[in-house]
Length: 325
Image (cartoon, rainbow, N blue to C red; front, side):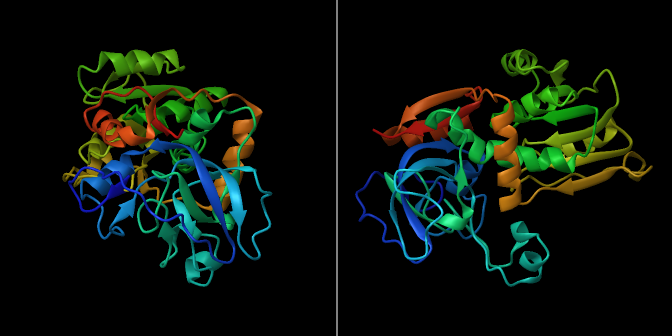
């Protein structure tokens, strides 16, 4: 399913099977979750994608071929393929353990072809082993909603009272992790979105309400997964002095001006950019220690446009996952 240009429907077509290079594997895609970043690429909100492009970066597949010097995975092994597809290993960020900020990084489903296809090539160094307790379709959302959610949670520190703004795919995973860690989760949704509020409560949130209201208790930290910049001042008003507001998305609308008073007393605003392989390894270890329940709605591979529309119009609870025959 190919994106030819922004703001156009994906086109079903037949391509040659990808040719792998040294250090790469060829994966037969079993499932690929649909991320809001896919939607932002398709809608033209993220700049300079590779075009034409195969979207998709929450991939579960089986290794069917390995290139020279690719020896991490045996043929037939199941692997997870995330957003980060390659880094240079030489820039100041790579050398300092911040490969997520690599100046030359390449990303699956954005600057590299991704998983809305039957086969894809991937650098084996950036693939992960998946705990056997997860099926293909339930493991797929872990590859981004889980990974970026985990990195956002780490950025939030040891917050006992944690706010989550935007209760979609990432939030429904983070909520479970936070509850497992003994934290209290306060979920914020669009005004009037009673369905998502009930969904949050069913996953362990202690309170769920309107994103324009204040929670019943001050928060130690808040994570914003929604792409609305106006939520940043709202979250700052909700966090206690010394608290942190984490912006967990790649794209966000402009943040409106706000009074210094709501930032003062050492409140912090930070963003999360991409992920590192260490994030992936830590998260997969965590996911193997207790069962994360990924709530999914599956779509046949050829209905990728319908899956994107469901995400765009807010018709999903949890994550959409494309399935391959």
